[in-house]
Amino acid sequence: MSNLTAHWLKRLAESDKPVYQTIPDLIEEDVASGRLRPRDRLPALRDLSDALRINYTTLARGYAEARKRGLIDSRAGSGSYVRGRPPAVPLRAGTALEMTMNMPPEPPELTALLAESAAQVIGTADPWSMLRYQDFGGSQFERSMASQWLRHTLPSLRADALLVCPGIHNALVALLLRLVKPGEAICTDCLAYPGLKVIANQLGMPLAPLPRDDEGLNATAFEALCKTRKPGVLYCNPTLQNPTTRTLSQTRREHIADIALRYNVPIIEDDAYGMLCETPPVALATLAPELTYYVTGMSKCFGAGLRVAFVVAPGARHAERLSGALRATTVMASPYMSHLAARWIESGVAQQMLEAIRNECAVRQHIAAQVFASREIEASSDCFHLWLTVPSETGWSASELASHLRTKQIGVVSGAAFSTDGNPPNAVRICLGGPGDATAMEESLHLVADMLDHPDHLHSPML
Image 1 (cartoon, rainbow, N blue to C red):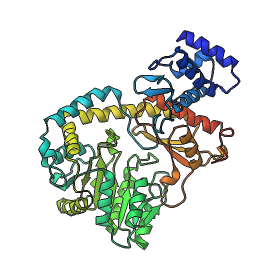
Image 2 (cartoon, rainbow, N blue to C red; image 1 turned 135 degrees about the vertical axis):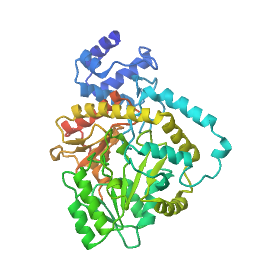
Image 3 (cartoon, one colour; image 1 turned 135 degrees about the horizontal axis):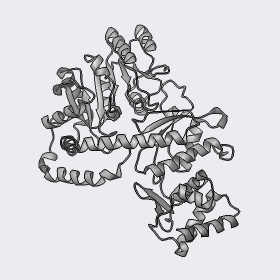
Image 4 (spheres, helix red, strand yellow; image 1 turned 90 degrees about the vertical axis):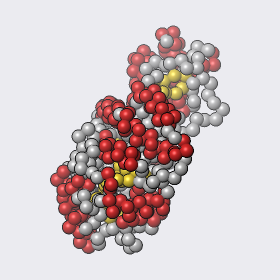
């Protein structure tokens, strides 16, 4: 690529346009002339920025603009490469690194293993059995494997209290229908999973938001609410909370469990990210087992397409009653999905995937910490998202920044999506996972940082 570098140096010196706009022009010209061919790999950002004697962030913006035009793409393990002539219509949002949904990284070294093991599992399953109605809550084998998987976070769980269901979101619908009586409220953090807000609105159930302190959900405020207006349930995401990544201390967990026990308030413990912790904290389900419905799933350990979740009820009778609500809303989990998840647990593929995602999370969080070294962020090396405060001096609101980033094909979620009290912080959640590799993620993060560092020329009068 040395000839290409020399050519670009000359063309950049001749151009009157900003460098980040000239870069995609050069790529397009070189594709048309044959200097670049489809699937040619482009130099790494750091190497090329040094060779062209331009700022890394400026070059990253140029690559991002080229992706937006459909000129280049990035794939895990292969860097950035030429797509060829741009398509007749713009690429849909999401073809660049997608950070809107909270998706785990996709370790490229496990691609072949997942494909081969999935083919073997599906290929050896009885197809007619998979196409029939199943016992609700999972087969004995599936529950046994789920119990084995969950012993990492719930060492004393009973298999007869466990149900297999199609995703955490569906489990939450059934739990709220089962636990919250008419007129009762759902007590939750003032920052919570956006899906909870949607479910509560659809079911006509009011939210009772609790303030936060430096650690997370405020236990004193929870007790004050219980004294004046006992809620129907406490919904809590105590480990690697979405969106802030905070994990409640054992002392705070014990305080919350004690209050729930004294006022007889059921707890929904949403532990979607708990398996990512190599040494998980003590679950609320362990501290208040007679009141807690523990919910987790496979989507944050594999991907959102594996719609398999597990609910551990306080006891077998509670699980049986809950199964009625689940059956009414979802009929059953997909037999193929449940069987695949169980076989992956049995064979060790699930554990390999989990360990690979943990390793990738640590790598990506390290990169993010370097990119945002001068910014206020909340993050944990155990998870694949972070919470970035948008400084007031930039002039950006979180919603405005998120909207502007989407025009650059970078998706973030503003604090308003998570706010349950109508007073969102000026912050955004950024997902570090998804289909792109760490290099593509780093490019996107540098663009976010650049918008915060140089906001004046980026504001749009339409926003």
